[in-house]
Each structure stands twice: as structure tokens, then as C-alpha cells.
Amino acid sequence: MAELHHRSATVADRDTVAPNMEAAAIKAVGRVFTAWGLGTAAGAKLLGVSDRTWLRMKANAWNGALSDDQLTRASAIIGVYKGLHLYFGEDLADQWVTLPNGGPLFQGVSPAAFMADHGLLGLVETRNYIDAIRGGV
Image 1 (cartoon, rainbow, N blue to C red):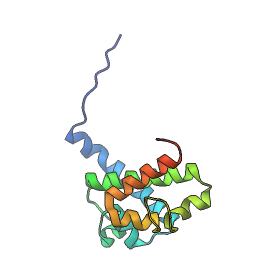
Image 2: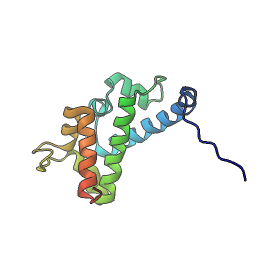
Image 3: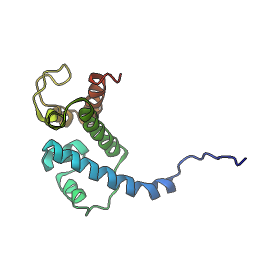
Image 4: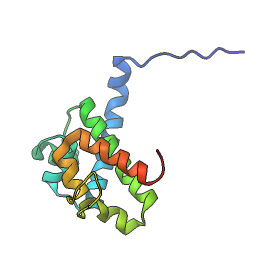
């Protein structure tokens, strides 16, 4: 019987896999921002990049690497989108992010504004909030 060997990912592995993973993350985040109706400035702020960098990313004219912070932001953004679509119907799922929200986390501001104002922590808290209202906690 053949043995399976597990090995840890190396820096070389990240260099090989990262460009494809990053390109997919950028494309997915762009689609989420479009569905949510967010403009360049709002999307850039949520992803933690400059407006100019976000424009280059969307145009597939960026050859940089996402930081761990930016990858975590992308994951949280995609998680919020997915959670909303699992909980709400299609239209409300995409509108929810930009509507004023009286929930205890948001205190009257839209989730998009909350996430933008609170950065990575706000993105993660919003994702956890969505998971909680879905009953996933």
C-alpha cells in the first residue's frame, strides 16, 4: 500500500499558486462589488487598496501580490456575499449591504459603511453577524 506524505506549503508553493488564487479572488470581489452597487472608492476601501490600484486590478493590469490582510478581506467579502445569498432572496441579499441597518452591530448605518469604517475587523464582524443570523454559530 502506498504511503501518502503530507508536506507543508512552502514559499515556492505560494509563489506558484498565489497568482491564480489572487486573480480569482480579485475577480470574485469585483463581481461582489458590482452586485452590491459599490463604486471604485467604496470597493477599494473595503479591499484595503487605493482607488488607482483597484482600477488596475479590475482591468487585469495589476501585477502586484495581495497581502495577507487583503486576502483576508477578500475572503470576508466573499463570505458576506455568500451568507447573504443563503439567507435572503437574490434582490435583498445584494441590497442589504447598502441599506441602513438598525441591528446592534451597525447602529443605523449601512453594513457597507460599517465595514469601510472598521476595516478588516468590521469585515470579519459583519461576516460573523451574517453567519449568526443564519444560525451558523
